[in-house]
Length: 302
Image 1 (spheres, rainbow, N blue to C red):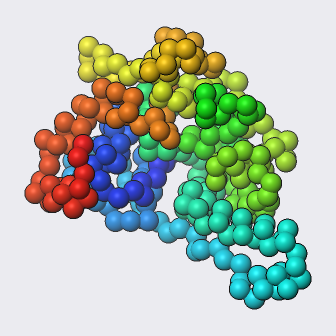
Image 2: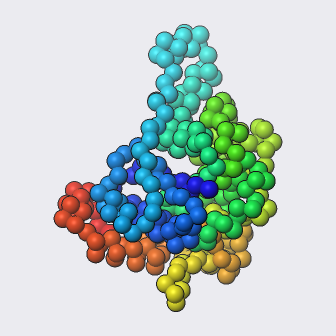
């Protein structure tokens, strides 16, 4: 089973610390059984090249899908016919299909030729994937819904989060299937909205009873703790750190988390993650003159 992630961010220190955390946790939990492959349309940063001495992973430079563009002639024809609805849908399609998560992430993951588990680079593993391997053959595609978070997902039915995707039968759901209908979409997002809408139209249940919210849990509700043996573990706090009244409706307090997802505004430097702070210090200690130049170039403090 291959573990895939994507790194298409500028080589700023905060992004590199994320990647270092991701690779480190994979190495501690999954090696040597499962290969880690980092997909990118850019060259491997020099900082990351040095990590091959410490960890086993593969950097794969891969293309994105060419830009989708309704031809100017077709748009003119639509305007002449004064079909505002078709024109509106074409504008939506142009914008959506050129979104990075569709043009690169969805395009490449749906074309991948072998079974894989995909995790966003800000979705950090804290338990080995071997725990869910017995369930992979139950369905060709498995994902986890967003947790219900106040002011973010409230007043919505549960919908898919694209940060963790478990694919045991590649090719079952294709890029063409996911992008056939782009309006209306039944949830927020880009590629996750296309997937969720397609699954809803097909009446396909992508969830699995044995792969719950703990495999894609919002970091705002969790607490990362270093053990005596140096290993990191993550547990549900059960409520938002800065607002104890906002309780999780998905995972009870003290429950061990498998994937801590630092999505949206809940980045590790905002939720006081001690693991991020430790790796920040490690990255600083390993800085070369080139790294220091890049930090000044990006005017970044971390």
